[in-house]
Length: 324
Image 1: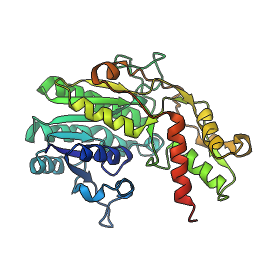
Image 2: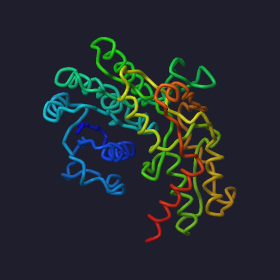
Image 3: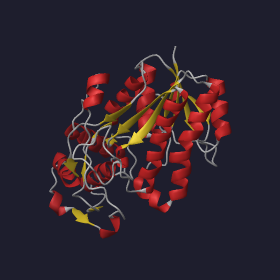
Image 4: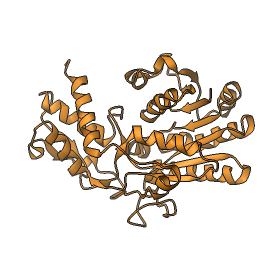
């Protein structure tokens, strides 16, 4: 039975990846940082029905000693680093925390693996936000990076330190440059979930308006369930490498909203308004990934359409909100 350690296990990707690995017969250890209340947020794992099948362990990416302890005790065959301060907007308000967790945290876990379990295969969750002010119309593995937020800068460090450990120490360390991927488990602070939750509230009479910022921004959106499959495929390869994971289709926030409002029979113009306070200090206008390498080498394809994903998210939010 292969053994996997997942940091950030309570997040969207951690939950779906746990489900995938359990279905493949893995023994799954999930690292969670305990709060002062003594627990951890396990709602996503419970929603998928996997919380009782995962071994939850205490750890913190900013603490090298805890990473070493976990890797020595668990002796994982695969390590998936999904832990991060993962919200772009928050990174302007908490840039130092973002750097400590999202950037230097990667070095801590790489060091722990290098010292205590060098034969383990390592996955780093890189981000399309690293492209920022895009240098090419389609962003691939060779496209230059131009990060536009503290989050993106931190992710870029994590990406390159993974490449460096692979080249310096011969580690099987791969990075997935994942474009936006969503699901009913997405946090409410992300625009897709903000939209689906807002539309559901309006439909149920719990709200009347949905406030957004730059609705002309374009993103390449896929489903998290598809994207965690790409993570696993990367660690099954004989040679570690970096891969863009994307649908290859871009959509504006405005058009995504139209899909959401249309699904519940509402007119977008009656409920959506623009709040200038929600614009970012430095906006990323367009992201469009080129998944050709992942398709060719991993045999991976994005299977769930944007329309299917948004309707799934709205239906889930309607179910959550109906008791109110």
